[in-house]
Length: 361
Ligand code: SF4
Image 1: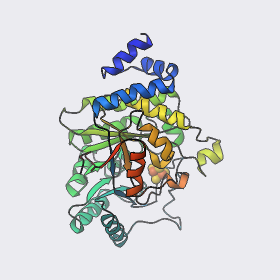
Image 2: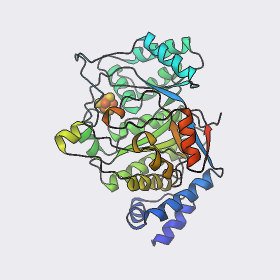
Image 3: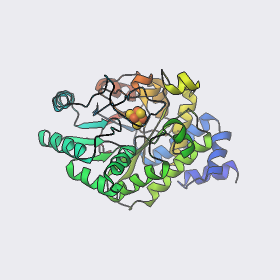
Image 4: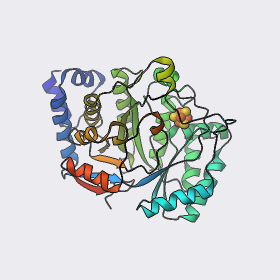
């Protein structure tokens, strides 16, 4: 197929196969890719609106058995740094978030070897009893797999029990690169590709709001990045038509500072601004059935994230009150509610605050 024929396919929102994806990745210059992705963005979202959200990260524990080589956040259960967040700490963090206009907690943390389903059910129920309007965007497929294996139950049962206890939506965390070759090398105790995708299939059957992510720029090949996008697109196309599914896709570059990958394996983040913008555009092109593409300002900074809004991205994500995982690996950009809106305006768009379901508020 010629490049022009592939471009025609893209503009009709048709799925590209691996070979076609590689052809455009390798042969189109950045400005052409940006223009094509921008065209798709405006077909999907004709207004110049860009979504953003106020939410707050809280880490429930830093104890983790996964041993990811890109993570500086976790520690062993017996470490003097190990913690499990107390209810009083949640309350003060939630109160601060509410005072800043947010109502959603992004609850992330380690895969603790002793915390099973009842811990999360009790935590979610308690938080909802104190804050009935609070939205819980919590855990991710690796944690669902970890809990299910600990309990000897299937993913659907785990998800249903957590939803009944107050879980509102499931972040697409822990996807890194959906390749078992990559995962067994950088995150050896994390779930494999089939399990990650199966958890999302079950979440979609339960009509949960989910997102998908990709952490790239370490040991993966371009083919593995494209295959990751194809997996996401294929799982999305399996969901029931009116169910939420993946509402957004968020790619970000590996943050290398002080990580095992960097210190012991010499793997550095070499993703330039141009390459990040290229991946945003490729994501928009390869994921015609995922409506929202988010630029990760936290990891790439304001100017690059602003250019992403002209390259297929239509969302700026959260102001991230307290982020402790990628921040300790070198991502140290910050925005408050005014700053994020100004950044969107400077890029030529209208900032609109949204909720987790991508409804403007
Ligand atoms: S990235 Fe998450 S799963 Fe991996 S070691 Fe860190 S806390 Fe654990």
